[in-house]
Amino acid sequence: MRIGIPLETLPGENRVAVVPETINRAKKLGFEFVVQSGAGLKASHTDEAYTKVGAQIVPSAREAFAADVVLKVQPPRQSDGGHEIDLMQEGSVLIAFLHGGRDEDVVQRLAARRVTAFAMELIPRTSRAQKMDALSSMSTVAGYKAALIAAGSLGRFFPLFMTAAGTLTPARVFVLGAGVAGLQAIATSRRLGAVVEAFDVRPAVKEEVQSLGASFVQLELTHESQQDKGGYAKEMSAEEQQKERELVAEHVTSSDVVITTANVPGRRAPTLITAATVAKMKPGSVIVDLAAESGGNCELTEPGETIVQNDVVIHGPMNLAASLPAHASQMYSRNVIALVQHIVKDGRLALDFADDIVHDTCISGQDGAFIQGVPQAVQS
Image (cartoon, rainbow, N blue to C red; front, side):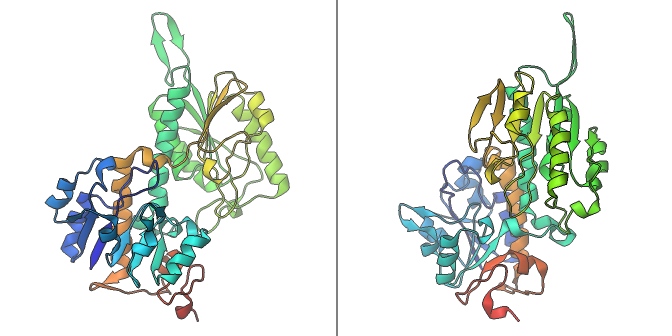
């Protein structure tokens, strides 16, 4: 089975779907790899590095997309040579981040091309799927970079400093949301020496927060049902949301840095920091809103932009994982090859739709029909 690795064409995307290290391991399982020239350069992997592990370098995207299985980071898109899906073989397989199948044009093109497509962001949060969980891998990168962005924007040190000029107090960091990104933001901020508090509606994460040396801020109304079976936060009632905003505002206004990571899958990110709260923050404070891509946790966030409001710096970063391409690609590569190994047996695609990993991630089937999660031909 031939696996194609095309060059990512989305502006600002520096990752590559598979790195040489992973190819070296996967070739022992009988896979052959075709890599478009230059695909790994922005992630610090040369064509020579790929050829050393036995991959074939091809000059064009057409040759990479002609493989039996195509592995990408971003969804296929329109380019100068036409739409990338049109370069794929009928009946082939695509694995990438696909926005959960929400892009109607991409889904229709995949169905028309009879491509079996798997969305990496739909990997279930279960122990057996953990090695395929690319969303968690990329959230690790985002949480780490969020703390660095905050430290670079704040006009003061993060750690406590004892100097000849006297003692300088540490920065106070407040992290909203203690999922993978939030926990990494906590850990990185603590390593930099900040005093860290964290808030999450799920009481189950309290021990994780405290194990990293941060204080856990808890809403009295929270209970175990605020967490769904996948470990994500559920949407709260109007009363709970109001109490949450009041509690958050109290801690936001006393902090030097606020890092927000709160998302509810399939919905707009909850607004946790209002414009009125920003107006009460200390001059020079920093907000890094990791929910910017889904609307933002701060009312004033502008996705993809850094703005200043009331002397508060508000970052709305997009695709932060691409800003650390070497390690982000390494982690994604391991995730995506683990999924390939899961769905390919003896060199052939072997799909079991009773398997939650297959059922939850497949958004397009070879019969040309599409039903979210399950190709129509195999539905009972």
